[in-house]
Length: 530
Image (cartoon, rainbow, N blue to C red):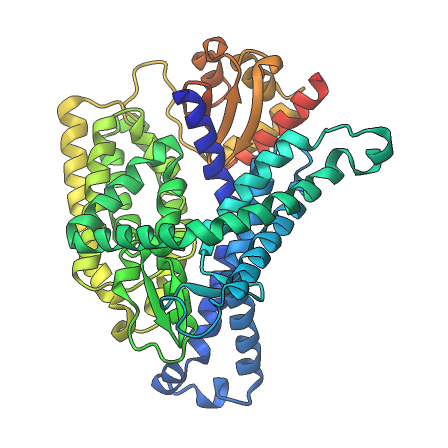
């Protein structure tokens, strides 16, 4: 039961990444557009002749702002479609359409129930209870509503996409039956949610209030847990509710109720009336910047200085690549996994320092938000360009500067004191390795030679007949197997994996940013084996 639950959670975590993958681009459009159409920014930097009303650039930036804003305004339906597609076993495009159908059916039903009971009138419900969902006046369910639809539709899809109906109705069988059963099911779910969602909404608000009441200690715990879940691939499941639902707070912005820390930040970003970004919202995001931009480079430098002299040249190239990836893109797993498996104690320390970073950013009113990760790009767009009075981005730098020596000296002391086998300190015969472009080229070369990597992975997982489901995230394969006892960790590592994480039938094999290429080759290998 426990292993099955983990397998489901890791698939849900990856399914969340489908709609989340839209956010960096949408955030860039909204960030750039909102920054350079903001009247205060234009006046402060004397950009009126270039960016003022009536100029071509102002028109282009306004369009960019609108294009980015519409994504954040419609995240619930994007989650409904994305989660349904991500959780579907096969025929994913049908699940995506059914996700949209389910979302429409549920909210249209709720809207009808509200109208029948006279609850659409002003002041009939507490402020913030209602909201527009793709043009439908319904209960404000936010991304929770989208996830509810996505998970339910995926379950219906996986159950019915191969259904055979009697000859008279055979046209409506198979994949055509999925949107039909979805529409009918979510009509009844809409009725059910009309009665139970207000109570759930109240409970969510109380939980969010509890987190807020814990103040800085609560922010520390949030940051610690978010980082601690990285090795299990379940961090998305943890932080998304804070970012996208009332668990992360609710505010009225320009007369509209907005729930979720990230949604609040981007609504404030799009608003011309924002004087200062809500720190109560950005407390769930801003803490990443100091340890991403300063702490992780400090840890990398410590690992480099602790490497054996003859290995330092090789380690420098590997660590430099991984550190630049973390700083510029916010993908920290390559550098984190370099010490996670060699020295778990270092990772525990890393989680504590990450929690401290979140807490200090909250304490010093850092109001910098983010799209997907705490990268340098996000920091410039949503911190520096918004101005220090609105974001206090300088405080993030002041927090980050001392984090660099803290990471460096603590990591160096522990590595040397306990002789941890970090890169460059491996025993004789072990390879010093992180994730580089050479890994991608090697994987391509192996694919051209009969895809030896895929064959090793299949064999290490107990054969194609033992593989139930294959997916991937930014750096790892996420696999569900039938019999976990058939999985051979050493054979999987011989395929180039940095590590293997087991939770019953849920298996995660860590490769690095080139994992999507490995998954594509593995899919082809499994398809050919059928």
